[in-house]
Image (cartoon, rainbow, N blue to C red; front, top):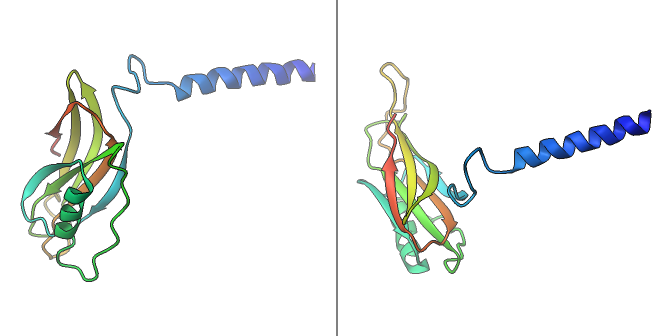
Length: 156
């Protein structure tokens, strides 16, 4: 009896794990590729709102220097294998106080495009925030693609 119960538990665990590890209903892993944060913060040397796609070490060097232009020493730049990876960066521009942020919320393949979705957040009226200029940013890396990369904002 004990052996039968253990076998039943093992089978049920296998079924549950196979359901949990697969793609969501109607999705493939190709449609929602994985990404990884390279850097994120509230202070950068980027004063304007913009989105950037980086496909080379040379371009990443320039962006990294721009982001950290007000710091000394400049933090060590993360290693990225540009043979297999690309970088997308979103910048909120200069804001009048703390409480602002920007975040890449996902990437998705759609026909001939790879879309980088991001969300900007602002402080609510009455929020207690730092009284300092900020320049929120979020940089991600993902598998290199031949698709055209575009950016879509989801404001909040």
